[in-house]
Image (tube, rainbow, N blue to C red; front, side, top):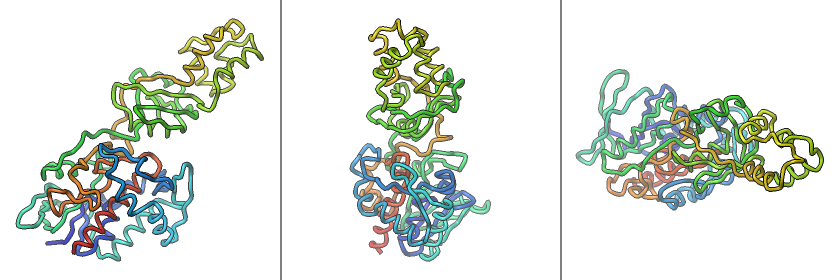
Length: 393
């Protein structure tokens, strides 16, 4: 069995590529259904792109690498495709676009495009290894419990990263890439909740608040959620991509508040109140009580100097916390790092030193922010690859 193109992975990037690259195409995946990560994304409604997607929303050792693909297949190109299938969508917040109905609509769209293109799909098929000889790539597979070998002129790595292993994520793309001499940058969980071994926030688990979270050179204003094991919520997930183990994160509670002015006003209006009691007027009561105990805010406002108020205001505006870890790949939405972009063409996604070998989507060292950016990278990188393959035939 010889194909023009063998695509490993029937996720967003793999199916998009299969639908547009032309020729005899075989897509394989070890899952029971195609697009499983699409299906569970966005609470089952798939945050399929972001209105504001641009290169600045992506992390990579080479921040310029993603520019070409993103410019040549934009979020509006994918929105037009969604519209052409009559799929209704809405903006939820911050440019995040979701299906009105179900994430399954996006999977059905991709499957239909694949069918029209004549691409074959083999599910519940495992890849054991990929080698190259006589001008062809040879993939050793196991299908239905039986070993077989498939040959192809080209191989596209689209198996994703290590995130959400319960859905079958293995990082096999990295192993195959390395077997062909490509470098793989350090990988770690991203868009992931942060944890604290002492579980200091267990008593206030479930409490959410508007916040600004800063880690490394990333800063995000969105909701923060206190959990039994630590911190979560959109602002924390975003900042986690910029956080490295051992470093602290800086949390500003209700960043639009002028805390010094609020505390001074409270001292003027209700001087007999304690500082912590006054904060309960502006914070969730459980959180105010937690801070009251943690920071010793039992002093009466009347007896509190401006210097002390300034100290409390500073803590509220720049609360430094040092997580002990993260929830890991188990709950991480994506994998940070991956196949080194130095070894790939930004125009075609082809390996510079291995003609016919391509890598697209999450397995490449390009990681988007939370909010539809990683799906846009899947669509854009897949189209860069597909067009290059179609033009080469």
